[in-house]
Length: 244
Image 1 (tube, one colour):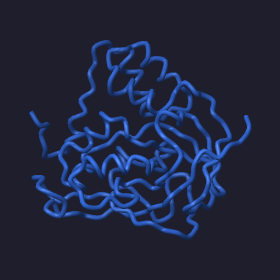
Image 2 (image 1 turned 90 degrees about the vertical axis):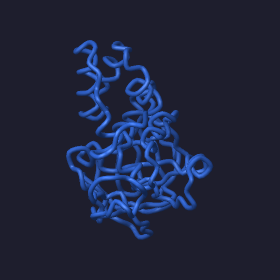
Image 3 (image 1 turned 60 degrees about the vertical axis):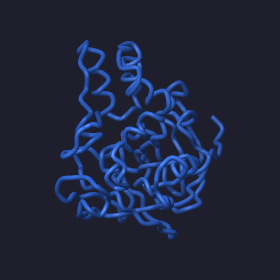
């Protein structure tokens, strides 16, 4: 296919895990928590390796990071919606813990397996972001992870096929789109809203460029009929209960 610039990096953020006191971020109960959510913008070129950007790391390596989730991407187009919706005074780029804040790419256009040249690197879309309780706790909005999931404004993850330097304002040049039917929006719909559609789960699980974790989840759903994944821990955290 012909290469085409579909968007660019508006800002690029990195951050290392830190311990946060509960009362720093709202009215949540429980203990202090450790997170790599707090990321700061950098303007100089930075090395993008197989697992992350230089200077970036994740606190919970069981559920975050890894080869399939080296880069967290979020569209700046969604910020206007969240500024209208959330009771927050300021939402700078990187407010949702993303590494790349982008312009020109949305969930109904970006597809699993899309391969982009960005700076000197080559990256590939692996899965939608599945928001977790740390997003809610960061901003003191208890149902924020649910809101991200329900609206489909999730962003997505990239794996790194070729390491290299990247920087803010780099173009995202599409060089391959092997699975145009599997947009991020379509994948979100199957995972979170069409849970009883076993056929759709099976089809998406067979997408070779989908992350291994999502493939396992969807394969289990399609083979263990009636199995309902419990997402409470991911969405509400270790010390919170869903709002009744």
